[in-house]
Length: 78
Image (cartoon, rainbow, N blue to C red; front, side):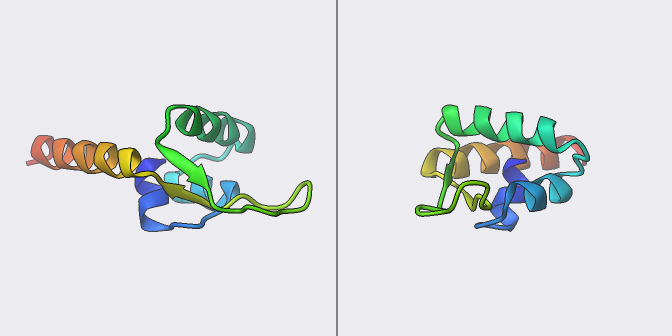
């Protein structure tokens, strides 16, 4: 999910889930809430109507974690 958000800043829950290959929107929502609670992502949608779409982006901490995960993944795929 971090990689999906890094590639698509401002993406909604649905767009992030699709990019990450998650079909269950409820599961995607739970994962996004956990990532937010950990300080890895933030919602850019400030003044939205109830039921409006979120707009996710990585925090500075999230950028660091995503880069480390990607580097580790690339190392293991060689």
